[in-house]
Image (tube, rainbow, N blue to C red; front, top):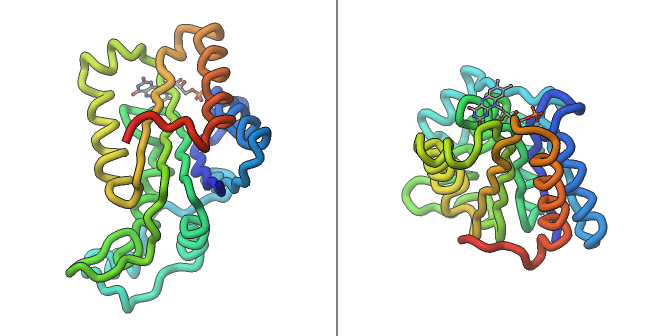
Length: 200
Ligand SMILES: Cc1cc2nc3c(=O)[nH]c(=O)nc-3n(C[C@H](O)[C@H](O)[C@H](O)COP(=O)(O)O)c2cc1C
């Protein structure tokens, strides 16, 4: 498989970066190919320009798409699986990734009106991996886990993906032991990406 990783964390010393390292170690060992859109490192522009806003708000697909967005479209259309790796910040992804969706999920590509074909291929697998400081019990009780799944899996990934899964790596504020267990699991997820996909 060819896997596209959309990675959003500003600091390579972070736990989220360790997650990326363990995941890609698993991918390498299972001989999958992958490429990474490292959004902070790319200094990916996340604000819509007035021209982009006009295009998206009117769904006028004749208006141009900026070249950096076109590059992301090309990466998406050569991927069998897209994996999003980011820390949970204020119960959602960092603004950097939200802005990626704002700009990259363009009309005519990620969705289309009137049943016209969209430019984006349907991707076999969508995997979301997000470390979170709170324990799962807290994320479930407050409804945050459900809301993250709904927004990310059902809305943003939506029908663009055949199978979708979100792995919340919870309770990271507890310390290194918890984090180590998460890293071992993520290495296995990378290693078994071809088969290991439990939810739909
Ligand atoms: C700005 C910011 C907001 C955060 N918001 C949340 C949150 O809403 N829920 C949560 O469970 N953890 C939250 N956290 C904790 C991170 O999700 C947690 O530390 C995660 O493991 C990422 O760690 P890392 O930055 O070392 O990669 C937040 C951390 C930061 C820096």
